[in-house]
Image (tube, rainbow, N blue to C red; front, side, top):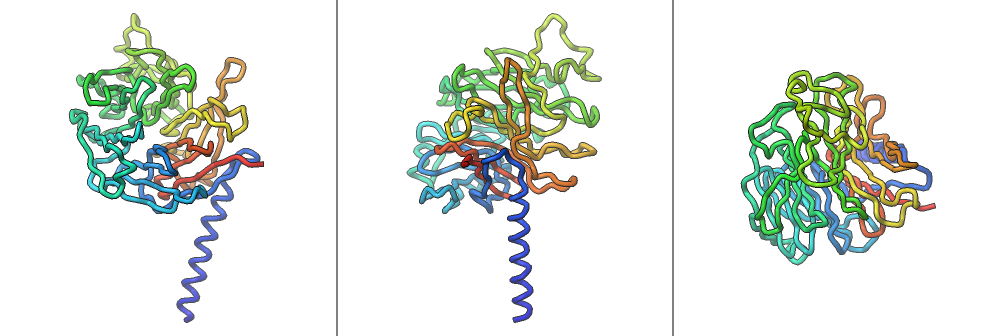
Amino acid sequence: MKKFGIILVFFVITISFWAIDLNKINIPENFHIEIYAKNIKGARTLAFAEKGTIFVGTRTQKLYAVIDTDNDFKADKIITVADNLNQPNGIDYYKGNLYVAEVNRILVFENIMSNLKSPQFSILYDDLPEQTHHEWRYLKIGPDGKIYISIGAPCNVCLSENKHFASICRLDLDGTNFEIFARGIRNSVGFDWHPETETLWFTDNGRDWLGDNIPPDELNKAENQNLHFGFPFIHGENILDPKYGKKLDNNKKYIKPVVKLGPHVASLGMRFYNKNQFPEEYYNTIFIAEHGSWNRSTPIGYRVTNIKKINNQYEYTVFADGWLKDNKKFGRPVDVEVINDGSLIVSDDKNGYLYRIYYKK
C-alpha cells in the first residue's frame, strides 16, 4: 500500500506539473488555452474536416483522425487512419476527400468520413523527389481547386540541378499538370491564401550557420506565378549568401519578404483567421506556429505569433508563448488551424498535444 501511495502521489504531482505549465502559457487578455487532444505522437499538420473531426499528419508512418463526438471541444476518439505511410506530413480535406503528401507521392482517401475505420487510398502522383533533407511536405488545396505542395531544398544551402527543389508546386486534383508555381523558397512548411484577395502567402525557413541573428525566417506572398524569392542567392531582404551570392543575377527580380520573422524561429504552419469568435482586430490576420530554433546559442521561437497590417505596416507580435522557459523546452508548436466555432487549434509534436485557444470574456 505504501508503494501504491508513493506512485499515486507521483502521478498527482505529474498531472499538477503539466497543469501549472499550461496555465503559464502567456496569451492576451480574455483568451484561454486548454488541451483539445493528447497522446498523438508527433502531431504536426492539421486539417479540419467536419462533424468535429480534425485530421493530423506526422513525420512518422501514422495519420490520425481526432474526433469530438459531443461538441465539447475535447477529443473523444483518436483513430489511426493509416500506420504504414512515409512521413504523411502534408494533409488537406477538400470536398469530402483527404489529400495526403508523403515524401515521394500524393495520395487521396476518397469519402474519408464514411471510411475512417477501413480507409483506402489512390495514388495521384508518385514522382516527388525522395531526398532526405527537408523531405517532409506541406500540402493544401488552393482557391483555384489545385493541389499546392512544397518541395524543400535538399540541403542547408545549395543550387540543385533539379528545378523542383526549393519551390512550391501545384497540380490538378486528378494528379495531372504538375508545374512549379514559385521558386527560390528554401523550405516552406506552411502556406495559406488571403480570404479576400486569394493571394498565396507562405512561411520560409532561413538557412543555418550564418550566426545566431541572421538570416531571418520569412513571411512571403506570391502575387502571381513564376516569382523567385531569392534562395540560395540572397536571404531576407539583402543578405547575400557567402557562396551563392556571387551568382546573383542582377537583371532578375527577387521578391523580398513581406515580414522578416525571428532568426531561426522555424516558422512552420500559418493560417489566416477568418471567423468571428476572436476580436475584430484579428480578422484576416495571420497566425504562425514557430517550432523553435535547434542550433541557436540562445533558443528562440517555441511560440505562436500574429501578423497584423496596421496603417499600411505589418506588425509582428507574439500571441502565445511559454513553451520555452529558461532555455527549457516545454513544447514545440507546429501548425495552426481555425475550426468551426472560431477557436484556434495548435499542434505540438514534442508532447503529442493539440491545444485549443479560444476567446471568452
